Amino acid sequence: MTALQTVLARKTRGDWIAYAFIAPAIVVLALVVGIPALTTLGFSFTDVTFLRPTEFVGLRNYLTLIGDPVFGQALWNTLYYTVGVTVPSMALGLGTAMLLNVRYPGRNVFRAILYLPVLVSIAAAAMVWIYLYDPDLGPINGLLQTVGLPVPRWLQSPSTAMPALIVMGIWRDYGTSMLLYLAGLQNVPEEVREAARIDGAGPVRTFWSVILPLLRPVTFYLVVLTVTGSFQVFGSIYIMTQGGPIGSTSTVVYQIFENAFSYSDFGYSSAMSVVLFVLILVFSIAGARIVNGRER
Image 1: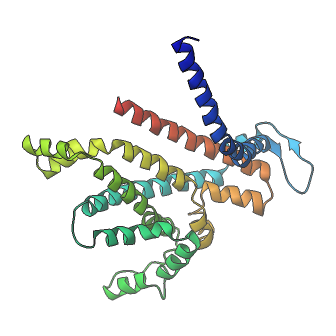
Image 2: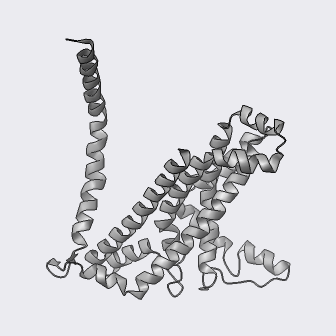
């Protein structure tokens, strides 16, 4: 056996060992994700309810979605929520990470405190925010009333319900942005910062021209992570507003839940799930290509 054949044989044996280690994870992923996903895709072409036999309807569910004003509003609400949470949470996360990347006493305590909202369960967080937004007893309206400002009915008004949910979403999500940006900042070589200072760049110019470009992979990862999470928002809406008032906080995932478990229309809800999956997939691929293109 030649040296090349020996190397190839070792490589092949190493590949099989690697495949053996990841095989259990692949099997679990196929059972937990793959089979339900394919089942949902199949259901989207049928009329599935508990009241009558399953009937194949082709693209009827998707054609109905196109002209469904309720789904259209839910899609718009989802986009509104996603943009409203993604941009501020990432900006706050970056700003906080910059502050926490400086050495001073108690820095680690502040890091832990600011990350705590990420660890709080959605049910507990929703109950706390329901109290905060209470129009009569909540401290937010109490503070506004003290300074002489109007006191809105946050979760009961169509004009304020979604902004109120967005504020809660920012509170929950920006800790993740802070943590990842902090990790990215700590990986910026000190030699690069020093070179920028030697070239005469001030703090602002160093941030925009040196630090921010180096954080681009973290930024696009956070964009994909935050957007995919926001597209699937459900828990806070289910607990706090139930999609109201007047559908102003109903999102795509909430409509999937409503059609499946309130109306037993599993075929239509499956079509919504497929559309949501395609939207998330398209955005994730676009984000990944942007990252790869910028890093070349």
